[in-house]
Amino acid sequence: MKRRFFCATATLVASFGFATAAAAQTKWDFATAYGPGNFHSKNNELFVKDVDAATGGKLKITPHFGASLFKMPEIKRAVQTGNAQMGEFFLVSFQNESQIFGVDGLPFLVNSYDDAFKLYQAQKPALQKLLDKQGQVLLYAVAWPPQGIYTKKPVNSVADLKGMKWRVYSPTTARIGELIGAQPVTVQEAELAQALATGVVDGLITSSATGADNKLFENLKYYYNVQAWIPKNAVTVSKKAFAALGKAEQDALLKAAAAAEERGWKESKEVDARSIAALKQGGMSIETGSAQLKTDLAKVGETVVKEWTEKAGADGKAILDTYKAGK
Ligand code: PCA
Image (cartoon, rainbow, N blue to C red):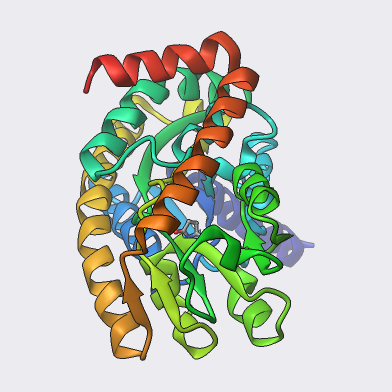
């Protein structure tokens, strides 16, 4: 009897001690979709380390790279429902939910990182509002390098893209696929190399970074660096998880987020140059694109922007007006 009492007390003390330690430390899961070598992933990793250091280990965030926790299209919802406290997702993929998500996927609206950043500033208030309604706080958004066209065969005009099995990642890239007479096939970045190797797709528009990350030169031979748009990944936190933090941890998180945003945009530019060199090294032909191709693409772009503007209504117009006024 005496012995049993002793055991129960020991268990009680042990579990009490454990509960205290658990209360002192908050643990979050951070769902991401890109491999550990990707520059967004590395930036996220530095963010996590910054938060750890600034909170003295009180807020422990575990990043899950390469769509290992949730697939990219599921990540936003996972944060929304609290299945992951944090997540990173590709904004333009969610354009069907709201046109606001798709403004940085519009062709030839911006032609530099500076302009892309200005467009982000114009988009941000609406984006924050939208995410807030979806139970999330926007922490940071980082641009991918400009988007160019990868093909197997040389392309001199849009007519040469006809019939291509065209990998798409957003409503806009699917619409472009239709307009150029290609067959749009949705493939997530995590499955891109496989889709190319098995012939599910044989052309796409994406960044130099994604080309280099996935060694696209193993299946494709040409990269047309037409810089069609500069889309972004967003990193968000569940509003509930954020509200449950103490003020010091909230401040540390926001400070690390601001640093990650600045570092990410800077790194994106450098990654573009490095990735183009890696593509060349892999045997890919890097092209600027013929005048005809550019004219054809500009026409496709005009249609897409017009359709977006009609769908996006007053909110969309306000973003474009703010952006243009700030240029
Ligand atoms: N790479 C990602 C998103 C944009 C980019 O450059 C992809 O192709 O899915």
